[in-house]
Image 1 (cartoon, rainbow, N blue to C red):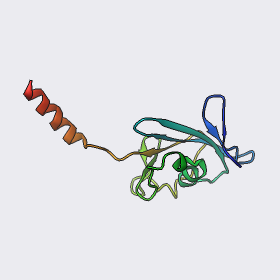
Image 2 (cartoon, rainbow, N blue to C red):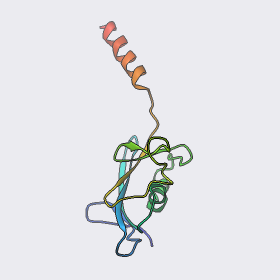
Image 3 (cartoon, rainbow, N blue to C red):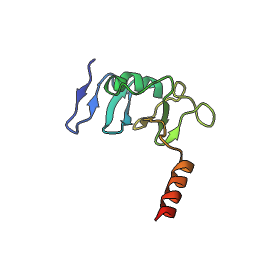
Image 4 (cartoon, rainbow, N blue to C red):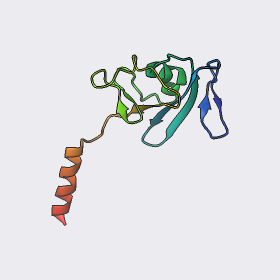
Length: 119
């Protein structure tokens, strides 16, 4: 089933039957962001939500081989939390695809400190 846009400007696939889970897939690019609402079958994983959402087609810079995926700011890394392929979604979960950092927090702190010294 092709995704459709809801009144709130979100995209919904309406793919699952009754008894599924309603989730969102979110990505914020440098200039735009997108939240896609999905209804998936019970037992669906975070990875399946990303694939089903079609968000990679909208944001070609997303590389699923290296992308970090999380749920509500909790990274799904397969260590402290399940991997995206193993995390079973709960209704109203928000699956997030994170962009790589352009600069680490330590480097940002050093830059701010050096700019402060130049004043």
